[in-house]
Image 1 (cartoon, rainbow, N blue to C red):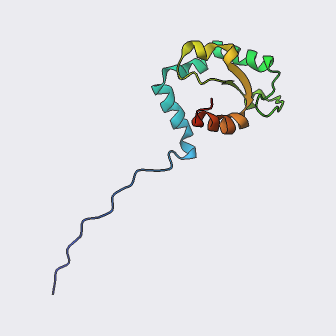
Image 2: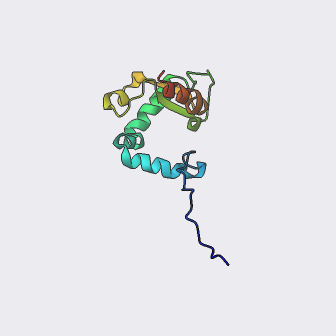
Length: 117
């Protein structure tokens, strides 16, 4: 009778292709905060004042879809031209506009990925 031998596995673990799980969003933000110094600018009172002045200037109206939003947590003071860590561009109020969260997280992100910032 022949002996059975074990075979070495031929399949290796594949790298994840989908990125992070949605529940892992907090970890992603924490990692970005640790690796990109400019991310801390968003946590300053200077940014909060600048954000508020942009929302008021634009009368709480999305610059992309025209929606008027009374809930300011659903509005973003967005950089028209991505600052990519440039401090003067980050703080330039003329480079900011009011965008609703829906437009910012979909249409605006697609435009930036295509290079049409």
